[in-house]
Image (tube, rainbow, N blue to C red; front, top):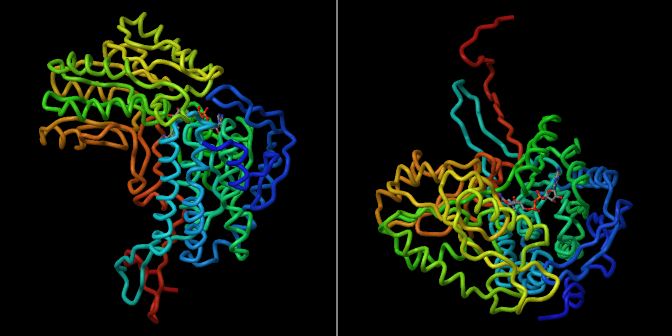
Length: 511
Ligand code: NAD
């Protein structure tokens, strides 16, 4: 594995990373000091002054100016810009993945997967740039044409979380760019190098395409105050925010107060029902990947395993065996499957949740710190499985750590009720060989989530589908399918090519 500084040099990240970037130009922020340490070993990665709300305002003005030009560029040409970003991402895939691992702590394989998602969404967006279709509608009036057009919306604010420090930007930015929008991105303050690397990639493509207004892509690095500035910026008609439910609630209220649009991708509390007919080998692999991948720090991480009483004990015994042998350690080591938690506070939150689970009658398997064979300075934990009653209050909350609650059920009605009985509604799964159970889970009376899987775990969605969830997950949809419509405004055109002026609904109004 290369030295991080060499990696950043190859990516074109400036030696002194600063907090504000517009196109190819970077400048220092005048906000409070921000120190970022790696979850791997606590080593300092970067130190800078944050951007200020005034910087956000200025970036919004630049993004707006660029938008006035970009919106008139034909969409397929906008797609060529995104195509080149995708090509550059292919060249730097390993380097960018290395930066993702250093800042987020996720294992290198998963970081490669995250960069692959960026490449996939670029490909999707390039195809989309020739398919921003509107409907043609039958008019009730003679010699009238009724049709929809989709127009660029404006500069889009993007607020992102630490656990997908590059893919979430790409999901939003690549669609927004082909739709004719520009971007003001406030990345996670834990992952400024990832953001700088993305901006450097865009910069290198701007060098190849001088006709593109550089301020299509802007970044302001900082903490909550900057997110608030993005949410309240009048020049941003859409704010796409990914993070905790508490953050989403605050952003939604601020954006709604100025009658803007928000697209929210918030916390999950994802469940998997395991039916008596489930293939337990598949179930086991899917459950472990979903529950301990990214050390339980994915929005789609499996948190509740809802197992039929007839197979629960066998499943638990097999899970415990796998958990006991999970390789935990440095996420840059290709043999490791479980890296660190993002910081010591996340470790404390995990300890507190396990303590509460115990008080609420839970039986805990695993948990606790790992200190041997791991880099000093990181927060390494043993993933935990907790046998607990479905109505224990702790099961209602998303603890961003590898805790898997095992809940037992007797019939499918009960399993679905348990499954849906939490405030969040992101990802869900059923493992069954019974087609009636599978279809029931996918039906209107089944899972109430945005992602509903059969014989697939809760995490690891493809970019082709719309991604997002219901209830406290926020209701937003990003990525594939028709999620692009979030980034455009719809105009309904009625054109009269007759010599009369018939009114709709047959109204007579003769003057
Ligand atoms: P977080 O809510 O602490 O921070 C997310 C982003 O919001 C950061 O950029 C942060 O600076 C900003 N922010 C925080 N408070 C804000 C406020 N009041 N106003 C404006 N901006 C604010 O989340 P995190 O710890 O970085 O990430 C973990 C959370 O994100 C989990 O809850 C996880 O489920 C969720 N998440 C959801 C998705 C999804 O697609 N649904 C994807 C990734 C992460």
